[in-house]
Image (tube, rainbow, N blue to C red; front, side):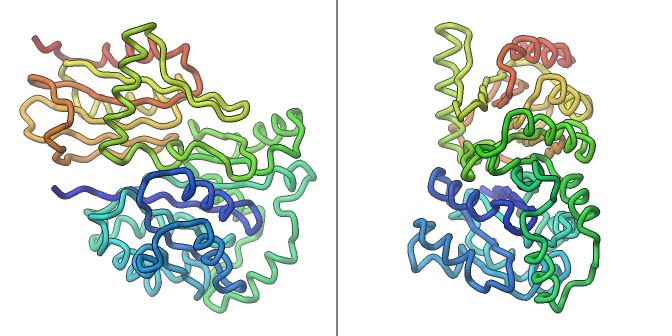
Length: 360
């Protein structure tokens, strides 16, 4: 059964905490990941740090960890990115997802556009662009902790085709983001964090979540999604048990960040285009961070896959394993992660109102 691989792009200035975040994800997820790391000027540094945290067996490194040291990835898409992603995709049957860590100078959009190239677009989907910002630097009124490092990075990159001013590059990375993470939140006061978040809201797309983290620690499911079929079914069962008992949702605790999950499952008929229009609006209204599931449409033999992070919605038709839940005729099956568990009942009711016909 062909399955499209989710690709998560992690971007942010040098020193914003990208590699620390990657190390945390690798250690704390059971997903089998392929990594593409784009840094230069410090050849092999990120790769060595990733190797040291037990990413995979030594014999698997060549196919699962690729270091791109020829310069900013957005300027070497044709020469570096395409052959590298194809190399990783040769192992797609053994992978749950791919993470691309860009250099600090990268403009994310050329990379995002490259994922739509005919050679690869049928094999992958964009799972989300995650932008890290340095909370400590921003609290001091700076975009980066050490501007000289950015200058060194520019000078070390012979392939750099854009001289984008730092402020403009910062805005571009934020505007491309589906999720923004404020790093080093543990050394920034709550008042400063609120001020930083307020300023960032003006630079991101409507509906983009802004979360604060420390030491790269965040529930991997928020960044990587629920991609493994076994994990998807297991989480469904856990949520169902909670709902049968108390109509409450399973909760993930992380510092002051409280993320709740819920299952939305109903045997009703829905219209594809109406769902496409309504789901982003509902996500904003109910503080949805991530959503995954399937919709079995009337007259279709395979379901519509639905993946959403922040304001980004991806849908396509794809076959599912025999073990997956199926309605008798048509229906919707979603797992929703949200910051507001009190709105789940309202969310279910509003999704139910989108149905065009209730199945018997």
